[in-house]
Amino acid sequence: MAARLQGLGTTIFAEMSALALRTSSINLGQGFPDTDGPAPMLEAAVDAIRSGEHNQYPPGIGIAPLRHAVSEHQRRFYGLDFDPDTEVLVTAGATEAIAAALLALVEPGDEVIALEPYYDSYVACIAMAGGVRVPITLQAPDFRLDLDALRAAVTPRTKLLLINTPHNPTGTVLTPEELRAIAELACERDLLVVTDEVYEHLIYDDAPHIPLATFPGMRERTVTISGAGKTFAVTGWKIGWVCSTPELVTAVRTAKQFLTYVSGGPFQPAVAQALRFEDTYYDELRTSMQRKRDLLSSGLASLGLKVFVPGGTYFVTTDVRPLGYDDGVEFCRMLPERCGVVAIPHEVFYDDKAAGRPLVRWAFCKRDDVLTAAVDRLRNGL
Ligand code: GLN
Image 1 (cartoon, rainbow, N blue to C red):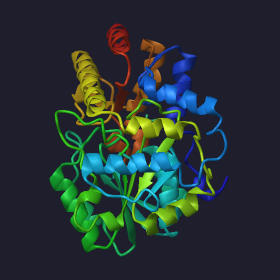
Image 2 (image 1 turned 90 degrees about the vertical axis):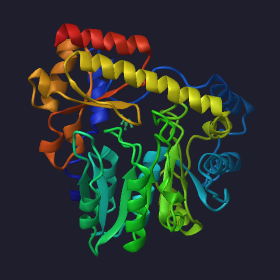
Image 3 (image 1 turned 135 degrees about the horizontal axis):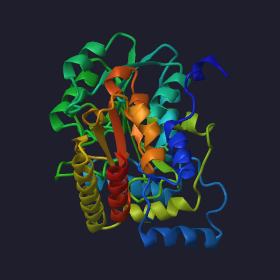
Image 4 (image 1 turned 180 degrees about the horizontal axis):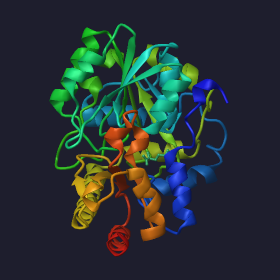
């Protein structure tokens, strides 16, 4: 195996989902919903397969109806204008978009600043691009961004900021002030910004999602990435997209075309339809997920865990020390056998292992009865 892949191992999500299957555990590890997405969207995919018109290669940049729907979505929710023909690119999920963006924009040796704890594919993709990751740690108890640390981390070798809000795994939603400061820094130091916004519609307590591309001077330096998996409960469809300038989209497409070329033919028209759902769809998604957040958070708190209630995403983080454990990895290894529940240790998302050691992430994108059963199992087993 090439040196740049050394140490990447197996993704924690695959490992923990396999463990959940092996032990018949409730899987609150890997983040995927346990109910299907909206029926009209599922029907549209079935119709697309049956029509026989979407089973061969779609265009490399994605089918026009989906690119138009993405463009309309950006205008409708954020007032951002992207030309569907030159400024939108469909990808195999946001994960491919991130990989292609980093491969397209990072020269070997360039520094990439990312928020720590970081989603594990960032580490792998920065490494595959030959970049050097520079973590900015969101510190417990509130996992806020330390703007002074961010400013101090920028060097002449910094090429880009990789920003994720709402943030996986902490659930932090960057505030307008934090986003403004990031935008000002990017402009001042002439940095590119890649933003992973896949949890854009999973933000609670009436907080807004504000794409970095909306700030002055940012549209031309930002690669905005999102996808359908989280918003429409179809993580297996792998339909993502990139919005940026024609130059940056061309760069990302140049890498993307040699990774997967294209993907998800019949899912593309279905997602195009879903993106145009009325506001009630998006409002109900948020309301129902916020209720699940509260259900699992209060359940975990009732067990004595210290709970960090997230502002967004479908993950809640806990500190396991109040239960007498000091190592989240050990805790998560013990949990399936002892309680029949799977969770994810934060430590795997940190360079600074000590900072992540006592923290454990739980997914709440599950049926209410499943969340309740998980808390009951934990109460009986811990
Ligand atoms: N994004 C999801 C999570 O954080 C799933 C990731 C994956 O399986 N690669 O759990």
